[in-house]
Structure formats: C-alpha cells, structure tokens
Length: 346
Length: 274
Image (cartoon, rainbow over all chains, first blue to last red; front, side):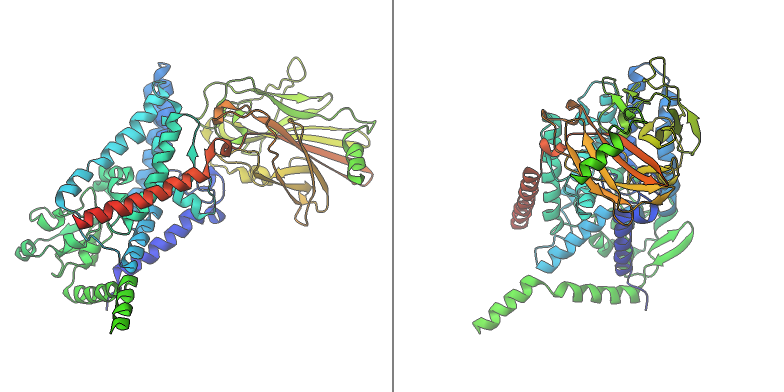
C-alpha cells in the first residue's frame, strides 16, 4: 500500500504553514535572520512572526525605491537593477529545488484555501469540481496582469513620481496572505480600512472585501485566489528550470478518460487533452500531484525530480485513492441534517 | 513619592554631574518617516526606503562625553560632536542595519550613558541586530526587546519592552522611567529577567490621516542603580509615531470582510443555480 499523497501533502502544508507563519522563534525576528528574503511562496513580511518574506515585497520596493527613483534622477540603470537581480537570483536558488510545488505544498495561503474547501465540503455546500472552460480561460490572464501591473508597473511609476505613494507596493496592499498570516498570529492591524487618502482607502477596501470573498468562494470552488495569484505567474516564468517535473506518457485511452483534469484543483484541462508533449507542467499547475493520484493507467502521469520518478500513476493506488475520496466525501453536515430530518419524518 | 525622590537622585541635582546627556533627533530633515523606528536616523531611512540624508542626530548636554558608534559587525567607531558640540558627525559604514550610538561620561561618583539605535543604509550585512543587542556596550544598559524591524516602528498605544542589564547581566527589581517629548511619563520596575514593558502614551495633540503626515515624537527611557558606591545612570531615546489606528478602522475592515464573504456566497449560489 502506497502512502496517500494528498494526506502527506496536507501534513507538509500544515508544517510549512506553522513554520512560515510562526517561525521567527526558530530563525529570528529581524530581516537579516529570515531564510532568504525572497521566498517563492506567500510568507508575509507583515506577519511579526514570519520565518521568511515572499519575493514579491522586495520586488515592489525595488521598483519603487530603487529603480524608479534612480531612473527619475537619471542614474545608472544597471546599478539600480542589481538589488532586483539579487532578489530574483535568491528566489531562483530556492525555486529550483521545488519548482511550482512551492504553491501546492508550501504556500500558507494555498493551504488556507484548501482548508476552506474542506470546510465547504464538510458543510455540504455545493462543490463545483470544475469551472466551465470559458470561465477558466477568462481567469487565466488575470495573474499576469496582476504581476505586471501590481508588482512591477505601479511601483515603478511611483518611484518615478508619476503615481501616488499608495501604489508603491499595491500587491501587498491587496494580498490576502497579509491579512491571513498576521491574523493567524493574533494581530488585527492588517484587517483595516485605511483613510489616509483615496488610494489607500480603495486598496484597503479591495483587500478586506477580497479576503472575505476568497473565504466564501473557497468553500465552493477550489483554490480561487491561486488562479489569479501573481506568484503563480512568476513561477510560470521560471518553471522550466525547476527540478520537480510533471510528465505524461499519453496512451490512446487518455482521450476518453479525463479524470486527471477533473481532479486538478486549477482546472487545467490540457493535462487531459495533451497527447504529444511529455512536459505537462502548465503555467497554472501547482504540482499538487492530484492528477497523478487520479490517473488510472500505469505510469501515464509521473512526478519526477530531475529524471528520477518520485510518484507515478498506478491502477491499484487509483482504486484505493478513489475509494478513500468517496468515503471522505460521503460525510457532510448537510447530509447528516437531512438524514436526521427524514428519520424524524418517518 | 519614594519614586519621585529616587528619580531626583538619579537624574536631578546630583551635583557632581552636569545635566542629563541625551541623544535627540532634529526631525526637520528629509528621511522617509514610513518605515522602521530608526528609519529617520542620521544616515537617512532604512534600506531602500528613503532618499537622501535623514534628520540630524544631536547630543544634548554632552560636554566631556566620549561618543562612539557600534556597528552591526560590533566595531566601535569614534563619533565627532561637530563644531557646535551637539550635531553629530556620524561615520557612514555602508552597512544596512541598526547601529548603536553610545555616549559615556564618568567622574568619581557617577557614570552615565546615553544610547540610541539608528538605522544605517547600505549593503545588507547578513548580521542580525540580535548580535548588536547582545553585545555589551556599557556597564548599565537599556536594551530594546526587540527593536522594531522594517515596516515596523514604535507607535503610540503599542507595547514597548526593554531589558535592564548591568555588566551584561539582567538587572532585576530596578526602577525604569519613560517620558515623552509630548509630556507623558510612566514608571515601572524590572522583573526577575530585567524586563520592563510600557504602553507608549497616546499623547499626540494633533493627528491627521497618514503615516507621513504626522511628525514623530521622542521618548526617553531612563534607569539607574547604585553599585559599590557608584551611581550608574543610563537613558535610551527613540522616536515614536502616531498609531495608524487613528486613521485606520478595524470595524470597517471587518465589515468589508463580511460583505466580501456574503457576496462570495451569493455569487456562488447564483452560479450554482445557473
């Protein structure tokens, strides 16, 4: 019997959540103590007890306070870009180790959304296993827009003096992980609406509303914020250099099956439809491994570390996993309530 | 009453010593007030957050004092008190981290020290401020526990903790006072680990919305002790800022979270029906 990969992943996610959100006791309190200062998941610098800072915060600050101000003063661009290159280099050193699995296995916000999904499932709320293709296609570009505008463009324009200071780090201003991780340490200072000026007020209104909406939608749709997260887009840019890979050896049966795409929390239907390419690590993939778990054909889908297979599709595992999933989904609060009422009626 | 007498003995007319020496900041400079307690220190804003030099750091009543700066790498550099004997000429280390300014003065009966942590800009040192805080710089020390890190600063209404150390060891059951430039004063006694905690006073008379719109005030933490016939007294000064909750609302934030949650449920219900 093989280990249940989803269960193993939940344990890893829980451990990563505890470490990243409360880990300052282990690594230290100050910036110099943190793991990298450019972490490839949404560990948040606004969390007083964090073990590391997500790469998106230095990138925004460097656009605003370094590149933008140097460009505005007519300074040397290459020198001004050095901190950004160092941050991206640090990010890459870590990213190579786990690739996009930083999203599916490590990110605190990703884990929180999965927990909301579990809550929704146990409450018996409607679970939409897959969004319609058209909706998925419309959502996909949003992460790129957020990366370009909120992480690079607006901070740069602010550094150039063309936009208000409130747009100096606009992604952090709306990031749900900032609210989640600080609240998880008992700090409510990030769950606020800020009336400093129109810019801060609009961003803080968006942030708090978005966090509430993400919680509700997360109970019925899998990983709602991950789909538009700029970190997912940044990962997508560098995914070819990561050591963890997702590989497909397509067989004719694949065309009629499609369980892998149904299992995918990011609704990547191309995992099912791709019949030529071996590399099926798509931009939206978080390397959670569910597609491999739910592939019924031997070795068709595989997770590899460089060239070494670490988890392969297997018919026996598939049967066992499917049964376990069925048992898990059978018990819901709403179902129990209905059965109880029916029992009384009889 | 006893505490008041003790305070007078320590910081008032001891006779043998001059008026209390104290590091202060002339906040008329141009640093970025938005990040970090020491961000507006002499070297101007913390890493990447400020353009140009910050406000000047002064030493009041420092006649006869020796002044030094302890760097993040624990080197001690001499600091010149400038032509006016007050405006410090702080050496640039090029290291991005906290530095300790220390002024010491002693005579036969009194040894006094003034401390202030300032943030220097430059390349990351890779050295934690914990090392600077653990380093014994003078006999009687007041150590922030912790110093505010980036995106953080001392704010009114928030807790600020300090450790009293004598010869590098925690000093228990010792009087510690805090006074602010806005006129507040607080007192406490160090516990068995030498720790004291103050809630910084909400004493800004004029508050406008926005972090950068409110100039900081100064607080001074003081302590003193008699040991072997010698009076030791030390102060630690720092800037503190208006609490942003004056223009930020948790209530409205919670309301918006609720509104987002309900909207999300309604949206998903409609999609489900569709």
